[in-house]
Length: 187
Image (cartoon, rainbow, N blue to C red; front, side, top):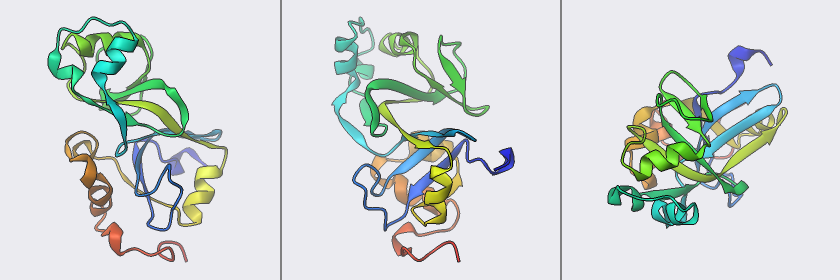
């Protein structure tokens, strides 16, 4: 697969026929996709906790009460105890990967401390865990009609209500995801 066909900085939307409970009706933002596999963060599954609980677990002093009430996402079934912050680019955090010119993925404590102090990224999403695929696995799943890939949208990632993200991600390419069948897509 050449670099032009990788799905970095795109969404993959679970097709209606994908019944795996980890991904049913999910939208995953692909942060890294290359010859060895893919890593993404599910952006429409909430964990059953608020960011304040993470601050407490990490013994981080909070000066932004608003940050404590931010929902935490369940980013995927891999390493569910590890935190990932998808955020608008910038900030110079210790362990960041630029996904695109406008979005970064950070795994270091300093970004969580900045959020607790009200000095974090302009927009962010905190997730526990990630979705991962081995070499060629995601491509095979797309060919098998498990996923539909769509362009990244800042609006879908950060501004759309969580319950509407699956539908909105499909609408970006003129698709009503609810109307698709497992037969749709590849012929």
